[in-house]
Image 1: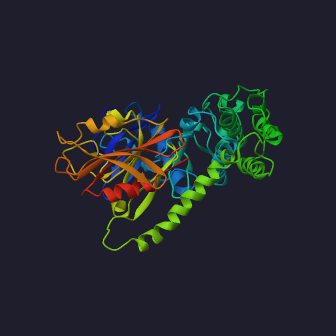
Image 2 (image 1 turned 120 degrees about the vertical axis):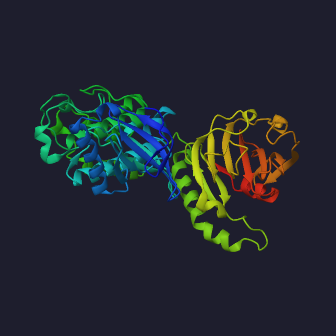
Image 3 (image 1 turned 45 degrees about the vertical axis):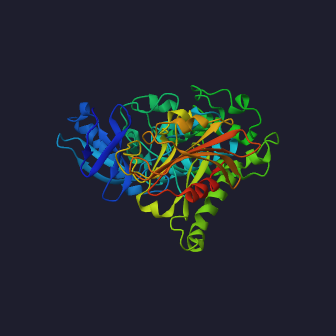
Length: 457
């Protein structure tokens, strides 16, 4: 399917992904100035009424449950060709599968994710629904003011528990679905989802795909040092005999939570700052959010725009302050490319008033691009970048809070405000923070304030 311009009032930005039954698009609700995800039934299923019914049933379940732990459905409509689409929460941090692919997770982070996934499935079970397709790619991650938020998604195979004895076709994803799901006509219950939770837990803890049933090797053999109670729980969940599994998602989740809260959970070999890094991230982020009103009230008269609101990316392990008066227009992209290829960065956190035109010199678009480069980089070549016509930049040394480095600034950039690029690092550390800042006016003091408030973990 080629990229459409819009679905109703929702302006399409790009495709997020596609599966056997549907394609998901990132779109902008220009009326409410907010990004949304739009799931559209695939063209080859347009005239299959049973598939359309399943698609709309997914939307109904998500709308009726309306839970913090599930993707929310805001609207449903039909295209001119008869295909239904649903407007959903946009998860700006990708999926748990993306997280696992980046490397093995710290134990506390893995258990935190597993607890929140389990809470989402518990909501479904309380609603009388079996998910039937729990896997890392169906668990999405969204930014929130106090940390990363888990959203269980993709209920395309979900069914009512009351209809469990009437399933006539196998459904699910091999490796994550219970043995009874592979048998057409099998009598299913909520313990099929418990098996899938065990499979997801196995992958979160080991970084490896879950074993085929019957599972024989506990995750502790792949990742030594895991609590024995955790090994036992996962092996119970992965039991081919469902009578041996925890009774439901709540029982499984409560046991995960108890293991996570045990005082002797974390191995002594991990340094304290690494073991508690997720806790500190949340404390720092929450403190920053609570301080916004204080910063706003204490801003010096005559210096408009110096109040900064925090925007952060767990993907890039950084936080940056954005001028508070941009807040109503702010659009965030966690995988944006830099404007300058000389920076050597692949992607980073972009907070801008106009994401579509950020890379255009023809439109007014103000914002901040930030990324972390491993190692201390000499980026003096940035001053030679043809960023704003043939004008040479103002080059200056930077010392802002813990940061020191260099800035290259164009006070007038193609009649569209000013442009600054900067490369800074903390003395004694092995990482460079690279920034690109577009402003309506030339404000080097604001550049210094923004850099002063950058934090990396």
